[in-house]
Length: 336
Image (tube, helix red, strand yellow):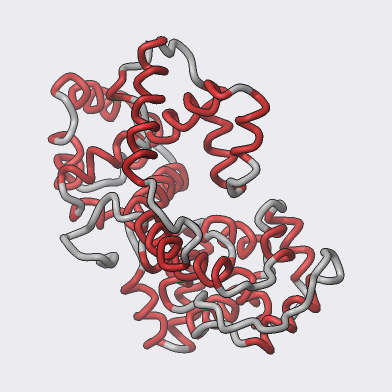
């Protein structure tokens, strides 16, 4: 049986949806993005040993939270803006607010979120690097990283530099982008579109954070030769595995709830003593002893496997930081 305290937010959402019945659950899922659907769907398929009491507790919590958050003027722009900022953090919410409140036409771009990275890379590979940069800035960082990994080696650095240099997307750029997407998707035009806050140093750093380490290093090495100042700015905004030691104890505990033991063992094989101790002290005595035993018995591990494990943890830590659930060094931004 799954312990109540061991349930993650995704598992609670899965329990809630499964309690609604197929028809109502499917209606809820229609309003979720591809990443959320995948996470919740996986959690639903893996749930087992859930007690009636746990289901009751999840539903009770939902009713309580929904009751606390209900307010007059739900359709009001200020209310929507506040809800999104509270849910996503001010930085990540900005682009979402633009698309909802400024009436942007993003049908083609939204449809890209459901496509395979290789399909998207094939679709856009012959387009101008500036157009590719806009598209990758719009998509989730991990999705963009996969797409960039599928692009030709000689264009990756140029695309990342263009992402870093983006300062919003102007109407003419949106118009050009929609012209491209109209070849594959239905589009209603770009009348009245305002500049959208995507791209920039942070966006480039987030994409590189979740890329294959070898490709990331290759891009950064080339960029340093071409534009050392820009390269340093991106590096300053990148979250590296060593930054985890700067997360406070409560944040570490939240992070550990989102990570499997197998991934944690792999990642810690390449960690220094200080980071390992930070993890151990935020676990129960029994759990930390088991983790120590697992690390000792694991034996040699390929560097690529360690890096992959660390990337997964970095992605979770970045997501929790962007949502405001954890902080690093008491600051709002990542520390390098």
